[in-house]
Length: 346
Image 1 (tube, rainbow, N blue to C red):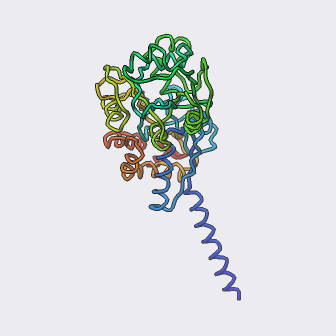
Image 2 (spheres, rainbow, N blue to C red; image 1 turned 180 degrees about the vertical axis):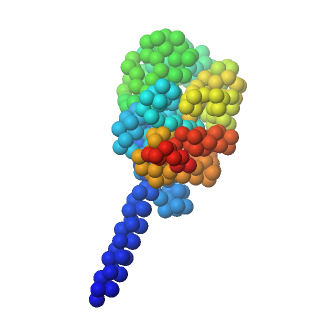
Image 3 (spheres, rainbow, N blue to C red; image 1 turned 45 degrees about the horizontal axis):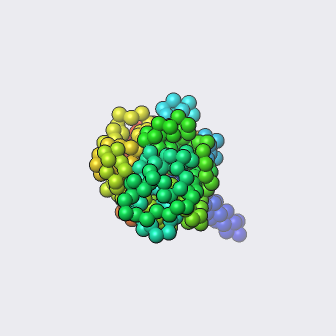
């Protein structure tokens, strides 16, 4: 009888240990809505491959930065790279995980997706409240032969702190001096006009609901929701449609190796084929990991994504990190990620 009790106790103990390990293997992240579709897909693939799960909260870059600094998640995600001094002050390490593009979307009867042409300067004037009608001469001049309605423009922007907003406002600031001086670039800015939506999905929902509206969302959201995007004029004067090749062209000249914290901003890049609002999405983790197993599992997840996630990324219209950049990132993991005793966890 005593032997049975000992065996039962041993089995319960082993089961509890396995359960504890399984729970420890699941990781949590929070932040940018821009990469949410691909992180969700990678999480599904990784669960099948490893049995380990990811719970990612798509709450916006600002909230993700707050949560990782508060240590309530295993990693944060932001589409605005943090500067080196802020990373060092917080004890954080940052690396790029995926790239993609931000597009302007409109709700206009009689205008086909990709038909309307806009420039950064004109979009900025719309967001400054200076251009208020769709048949304004500045828009008409860019679109000869297109019948534009004489209706009011409703501006839609993000209501939360957002890396997508950072990319969008950074681009507008580079193409319109007045926008730069009055509003500027940031994850959260004081908008001159318009209505807010939370997350890419909130902006998309408002644009779909409001006739005559304009907004900005990540390209995957625009395609998923069958929204009417616009062409944009890039730095070299070419009007482009958003696609993977245009996002790759914008990233082609990025010097990741020489940029502290991999803090590359890909807006308004040179090149005839470069989409003007391209960006990388970043992961934020602590250099010193209080829970080394969790820290290593975060790296294992993104290692899996780098090695096995490219096809899924392309399907969702993201641009995977080039192998050369992934290698730089993994080397940086070895150099920067330590356990409580100072031992490398990768």
